[in-house]
Length: 133
Figure 1 (tube, rainbow, N blue to C red):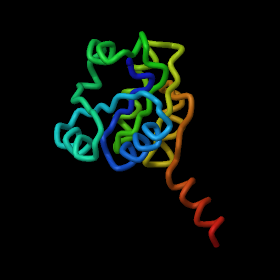
Figure 2 (figure 1 turned 45 degrees about the vertical axis):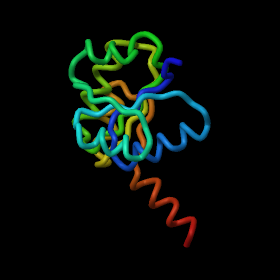
Figure 3 (figure 1 turned 180 degrees about the vertical axis):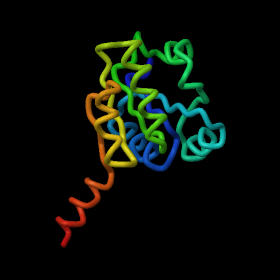
């Protein structure tokens, strides 16, 4: 079965997203440029691949511009997520792109780079804490 979604970043946030996708039966592939992070995803029980996300041919090789429906930009550096969003949008104008931002000021840049939605974890956490209080 071909993956429907590509998760870029094999950090704790991406692992949590992967758990939820797996629980719902959604097919996905995990990707990261760092071998140690790929190995950590393997230890969590997920299939993950090392990729140079700056290489358009490598992105095509995992299905961006063919069968991948959506990309999750979950790198810990905003600059990596911006670059990935630009590259993915260029390869597939119809692709669904969701990006996480680390700094609130990165959100408009991610949208300008081609992300459809930007998730600010501090905003979400703040709202959740407020609900609990």
